[in-house]
Length: 304
Image (cartoon, rainbow, N blue to C red; front, side, top):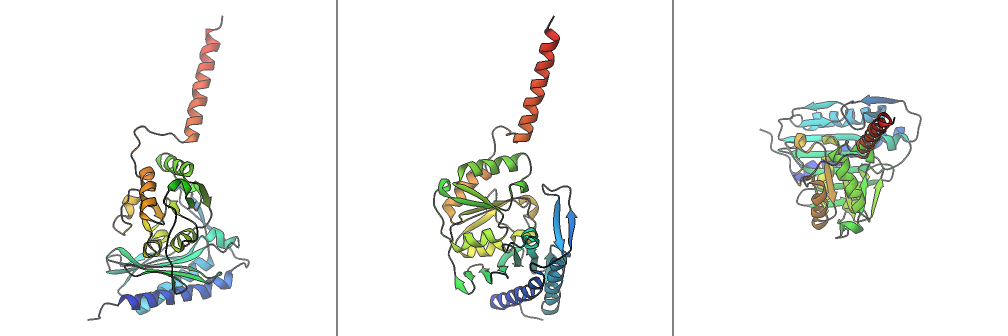
């Protein structure tokens, strides 16, 4: 009977996976590359790009896992999942932020997570172009290129700097409405950093909050140990832990904060139940237009 791997062994292997990913991704960085489109009509952003770099990178990491830990599960963005009932599952996003990658912006990252019994225990955010690697280990801490980092952040949400990849990732209705309220509450909303935003929150570089929606498991599993290992807090919008088991319930809505006080303030907006339905701006405009047309027709009919 094979003994269970130690945390140290799993961390070493996660770094090996990241090293492997780097060698492939850098071959295609800022070079002509064919881009395909994946379309999922049931998502707020239906189209997303994929390249040979995404596919080759995930394929290489999967082969390493199969060779080293054949009993472990794998969940990847490009090639699906196997052995999801395993004690250990590796969750892979070869290039998180493919739109950044294909436009030459070095804010994408390789995401590697190791889950034990469905809970993220190790997370890696690797930015190969900038030669930056964050490794978070549950109960141990988070490092940037081997040196410990600590999330800090402000204590007042009104003074906070908030990131989201794009405002278009929030579905119309409650998601969009709550995000807009949060935008009006924080000092400044910022966009376009993908997984890198979570890394800078964990490092105490000046970002305080990341809030996003419509994420897949591969988009956020690796981020949880990095943020929480640095002393931050990362949950779904209702304050629940992000695990394999509750992925369907959280619907990919996540919020990461530099400290617990800030997290509670964010949840007071994201997690609250609205007393009255709040309409998105597009729906409101449509209603006002319809009312105006009806009034105009009524007035025209009443004229002699």
